[in-house]
Image (cartoon, rainbow, N blue to C red):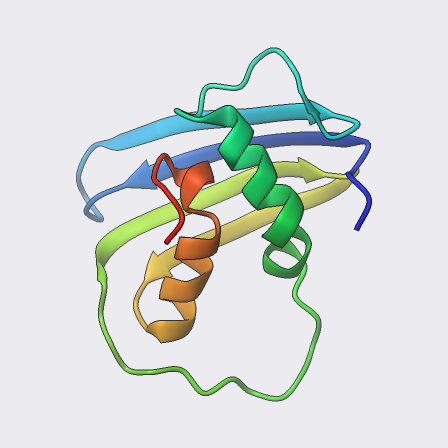
Length: 115
């Protein structure tokens, strides 16, 4: 997929539902980082978003997914902003195998490393 013309994302990450949260941002233009990015590793975050963002932010309809019933923890992330001019509002969690896979795909955007 070609890089979106503009990318402006705000990430709000919490370790527990009622606990403190961390906020990061990722800003890029033409697939190149721009001023205003505050994620710990902006280059890795941009690479993850360009690789997985379209499918995670704008999933295509399809048959129901079968997800393993495992619990990865109470962490939650809310990602808002724009991706190639399209509005983004995505919530990530660790509530089952499918959600854990989404979290891992975008881990650099959430301040971690991809696994």
